[in-house]
Image 1 (spheres, rainbow, N blue to C red):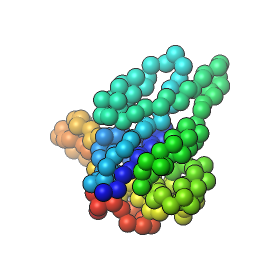
Image 2 (image 1 turned 90 degrees about the vertical axis):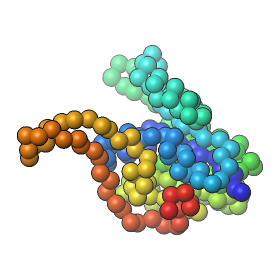
Image 3 (image 1 turned 180 degrees about the horizontal axis):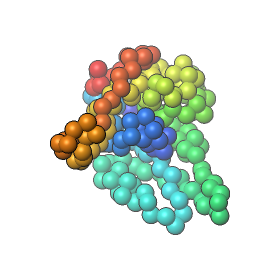
Image 4 (image 1 turned 135 degrees about the horizontal axis):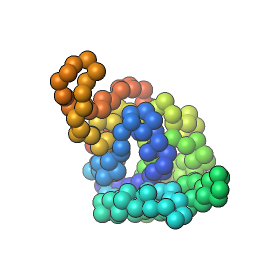
Length: 196
């Protein structure tokens, strides 16, 4: 059975889901979907955290409760300027440290800055699966990955579906709304068996 490590660029994927679907990601479901029948060696989420701001405390606590390690990326706010450390360096270091312990590395991001890492890991013989949204994921990532899996095709499996009531503009009745996923059939490569 293959061993896998999953590295999640939390800010990148969070913004993708929020922008495209106006929804929230269920990280546990995402990790379980990617893992499938494989042995999970480690799952790490890289989360930007502003110094002195507690807005991410609940997310970090929830991730840890689900068994997902968290690496906090410091964001400093000075006046009107924000300086943030991206996920590229810490994710690259962790990938290089984990590469001898796994057969597959799953990278959850659409950020093209990761393509040198993906290329290097492939050259060492590792399988590299990139998970992102087809419309916003760098073509370099798609091309260098062993497999690219378009999360748009699995959105209903990985979002937290809101259960709220509201009034439809087309009727006076109160009805439940829920998010619907747009289906994008474009993927390059086969998805793991858990998400087919």
